Image 1 (cartoon, rainbow over the protein chains, first blue to last red):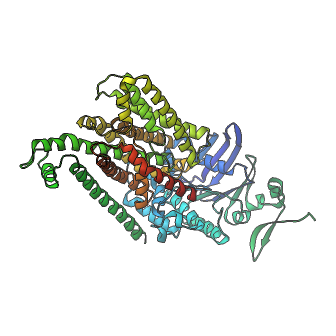
Image 2: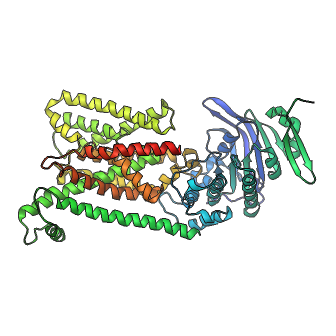
Image 3: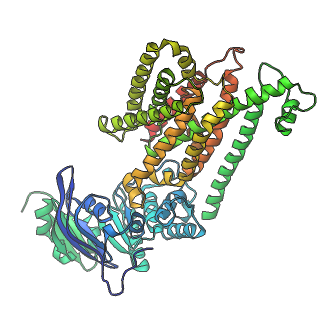
Amino acid sequence: MKVEPRAGFATALEVRDLSVELGRRPILSDVTLDVPEGGWVCVIGPNGAGKTTLVHAVAGLAPRTGSVRLFGRPIDELGRRERARTVALVPQLPAIPESFTVEQYVLLGRTPHLGLLASESRRDLEAVASALDRLDLAWAAGRRLETLSGGELRRAVIARAIAQEATLLLLDEPTTGLDIAQQLRVLELVEELRTAGGLTVISTMHDLTLAGRFAHRFALLSEGRVVVEGTRAEVLLPHVIAEHYGARVGVIDDAALGWAVVPLSGPEP
Amino acid sequence: MSRTGRDRRLSARARATALGVVVLIAAVLIALLIGPVRIGAANVFRWLFSFGNAPPGMSEQQALILADLRLPRVIVAGLVGASLAASGAAYQAVFRNPLADPYLLGAAAGAGLGATIAVAYGPSDALDLTVPAAAFVGALIGVGLAYGLGRSSLGGRATTSLVLAGVAVASFLTAVQTFLQQQRSDTLRQVYTWILGRLGTTGWDDVRLALPSVALAIATLWAVRRLLDVIEVGDVEAQSLGLNVTRLRLVVVVAASLATAAAVAVAGLIGFVGLIIPHTVRMMVGGSYRSVLPLSVLFGASFLILVDTVARTVIAPAEIPIGVITAFIGAPFFVVVLRRNRRTA
C-alpha cells in the first residue's frame, strides 16, 4: 500500500536533526526541514554543500542518524518497496541502460508495485503509457534511450519516477545539461504534475532564477547545515547568496520581466 | 503510438525466439546425424519418433550409438552451452559490466581448481558429488576474489578493472591448479583431458550429474530476469525503486556460479560462450534481460551443440578441444565488445 496522506496532515516530509557521515566525513549535520504536502521546496547551496546527500537520505538511500518522517510515518517503519511507492528519485546523473527502449526504461518505475517475481499487468502498462503521455514522450515509447536528446532523456527519467506513482518526487538538479528551452519545459512539466497530481516536490537546483520562479520555499545548505530556510523573499537575497556562495549577485523583481538573480561581474564599485 | 513501438519489439523478440527454436532443433539433428558411423537422416528421424527403440531397418548397434553416445553428448553440450551463456548474461547484469564472463571472471578457473583438488585428492567415484561441489565452491571463490580485487584495488566502476582482476585471479588459480596436477602425476592425464574441455567421454552419468544444478541455476536466473533490468540503472537508483540490490546480487552470483560449476564439472574449461551469446542476443532484441536471458539459454545450447559437432568432426577420428574453438571465435569477439564499449563510455 502507498502511504496515503492522512486527513489534515499537512507535512509531507519532516526531517529532524538529520546527520550523515560518509567515510567518517560529516556531510550533513543536524538538518531540520519541513516540506508541506503539495508544495515545492528547493534545496540550494554551493557545490559540495550536501544537497545530493540530503536528497538521498530523504529517500532512505544514505546511512544516517536523526529522524525522517514521510506523511507522519518514520521512514524506517516503511519496507523498501513501500518506501519506493512513496518517494521517487530523479538522480542528477541517471545511469542509462544500454539498448533499452524508452518504454522498457519507464516500466522500471513499476518495480515497487510488482511482486518480486511477478510480471507487469495491464494496470502497470497503463501507468507507463500515462507517464509517457504526461511527459510528451508517447511517440518515443519504442525508441532506444541512446537515440534521445538530452531534454528527452531527462523527461524519460522523470516519466519513470511518475510511473512509480509516488507522492513525493525528489529531483536532483533536474535541469543540468539542458538548454534554456528544455530547462523551462522540464520545470513546467513538473509544475503541471505537481498541481494536477497532488505531488510534493523537493528539488536541488543551481539556477537560482529558475528555482526562485518555481519553488515555494527554499533551504540553503552550506557545509552540511541548513543556514537559512524560508520563502524567496527570506532566502534569495544578495547578501545571503554572497555570504554562502561567495558570489556577487543582484536580484531583479521587474513587473514585466519577472524575478531573477543575476551575477554581477567586474570590480566592486 | 506506444502500441506500435511495443508490438514491433515483441515481434523482434518473437522472431528471435522462433529462430532460436529452429536453430536448436537443427543443431540437435545435425549433431545426432554426424559421426564416424553413418546412420542416415531417415533413420535418425525414425529412431527419435520410436522413442529410442531401434526401428526396422536400423541395426542395434546404430541405435546404441544414438542412445548411449550421441544423444547424451548432445544433451550435455546443450546444458553446458545454456549454463555458460546464461551465467555470462547474469554476471554482466549484476556487475554492470559487458565483459563479465564465467571464464574471464575467474569463476571457471576457480571451478577448475576445485574440481582438480577433488579429482586429485578425493575419492575416485566418477559420479561422486565431491567434484561438482568442489567446482561450485571454487567458482564462488574465483568470482568473489575477482570482484573484491576489482572493486578495492582498481577503483570499482571501470569496465576493465573487473576483467583485469578476473584475469589475474584466473591466472593465479590456474597456476595453483597446475602445481597440484604436477604434484599428483597419477591423475595428471585425467585432469588434463578434462581441463581442455572433454565431451568425448560423455555419457548419461554426465547428464545426471549436470542436470539438477543447471536446471536449478537457470530456473533461478530465469525467475529474476526482470529484476536484472532494474540493476541496470545502478545500485542507488535500483534501491530507490525498492530493490534489495545486495540480496539480488548474491542470489544471482550464487546461481550463475552454480551453473558455471556444473558446466566445468562435466565439460572442463570452455571460454567465451558467456560473452559471445548474450552480446549476439542483445544485437537481435536489445538490452532488456527479460529477453536476453531466455534467448541466451536457447542460443547458448545450440551454439555449443554445433561447436561440439565441429570439434569432433574436423580432424576425426581425433577431437579438437571445444575450448579451442570457442576461443577462436570468442577472442576476436572480445576485442569487438571492448572497442564498442570504449566508444560508448
